[in-house]
Image (cartoon, rainbow, N blue to C red; front, side):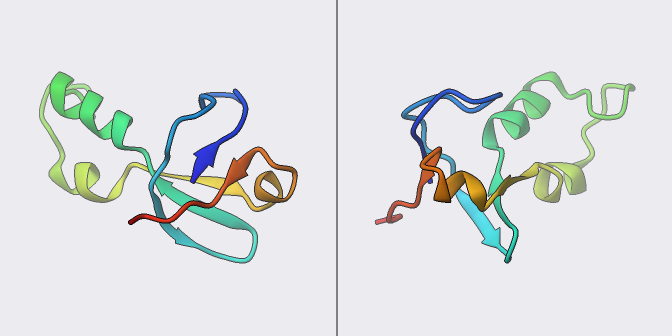
Length: 78
């Protein structure tokens, strides 16, 4: 999905990969947060990487209304 305007942590023109969707939200994979955690190796305060968190813990959701109002556009992954 592509962001069409700056909103919160989302930046205009940036692409966000979708993980899955539901009726109310589209869930995307926050790769930047994952990369930051790997580089800093500090997810739980003791400088050890929790690999389960790295694999499954960086998903965020976007309300479907943001697609209806034009904030985001669905794009093809190809």
